[in-house]
Image (cartoon, rainbow, N blue to C red; front, side, top):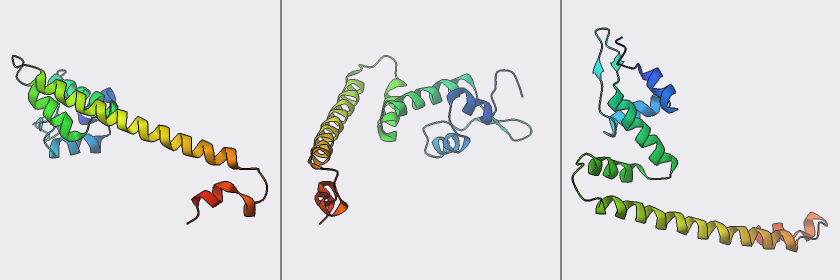
Length: 133
């Protein structure tokens, strides 16, 4: 294999991505299919490495695959306005804020149940009582 090409395992190691995930991203069109070597192995390029690194970072930040697809499509035209990209990021931020609010409410409820517990017997347990229908 040429020095400027990566095998799928190397690409996976460099991006901390499982081989199955790389193949999945190819199947759904987030990552273009690479050229093949004479031995029919996938030969990934620096462009694949950069694109997969982008996808992984976006996934780490919680963007959905549809949002990542849109971000990648928008990033292909380097001269266009980034308004649409900003809109996607703002939408995602609103989703994160909603999740944080839900988690805070959940934390409050769990804390309330725990403080109601007198650590007696299960028959008197406020946590079991709160969870029971």
